[in-house]
Image (cartoon, rainbow, N blue to C red; front, side):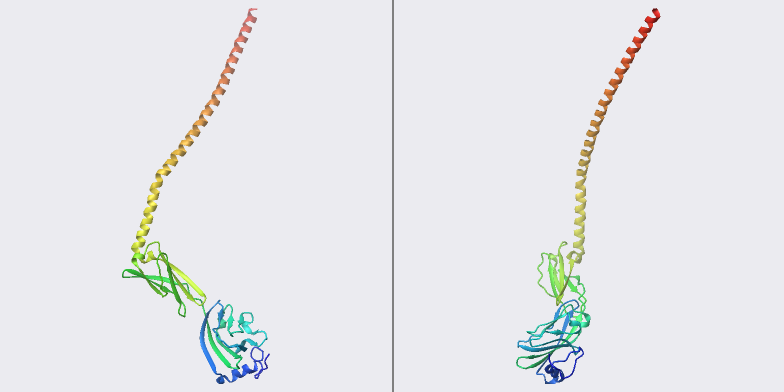
Length: 293
């Protein structure tokens, strides 16, 4: 690695000699760039670096602490919190931070030397923001239509887009106008907000914007339920009659079977009575003959 002029940096590694000179003699740099950039917590962020020359040395710092360093054919060295979350592009000098955290906020500097021995410094002030809130849609009647407005809590301007069933909406603004003739109880509209890689959406029923349309829709729905109930009464009655008839036929069959079984038993009992009577007559006759003798 390079041998530095200023000893070791905060990260415990020596600064490259020529890049150390850049830090010390910053006013001699032919080109200095400073840009404010923003990222969202949890996203991956890449600093917007565009270098079209061959790079021979790269140093990235955060608040004057080294975070990434590369020279020639050597491997890239990462420091501090970027040890497992950073990726340096050796072709264009860009640095990617994975899974942004709040403490990634800070001032980042890219110092590099190109093949023409030109020294360049690029500065980026990175602010890490909380994700935008879920969007909310409000509606206001305006003339012959309704104005839908989409809002979300966020510190920076958002990109808006709209979608609706059966209604073409090409506006990419925070507010859209929908003519009343296109408003039906079953139709909905959705607002989409986007910043960087984060996108969220919300939906609203257009009937909520016109109470008369909403009431008519609910009345029609309620009337349909009543009509369906009335039509179902004869069906229920017929099913009840069929059920009772089947039960009646089944009960009649059981009674008939029971009667047949009972008649057979009674017949058997009558025969037993007749046999007993005949036996008694015989015994009486025999007894009478004995007395006569």
